[in-house]
Image (tube, rainbow, N blue to C red; front, side, top):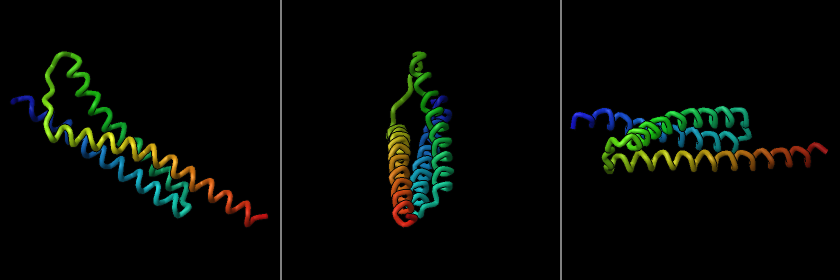
Length: 114
């Protein structure tokens, strides 16, 4: 049980950074909806940075297990992995939605600008 504290810290990083990445991706979509595309890209960059930190935590666990060290799976661990996977999905979706909003804004501008 002496190794529980580092494991718990890593799991909390998955939850914290994964949740932050998802939130930033949602903020990016909301900014794009308001045609604030610079803000949307900034939020997307922030989301990617948080995702990188979450992914780094996960990689540490994977490396530990690959080295033959047992990593206990708990409900909290599953919750952390869920946050990471949701963040990845939201960031991928945010990129697509932002592209659609940009294309719509450009189309609207070209129709009204003519």
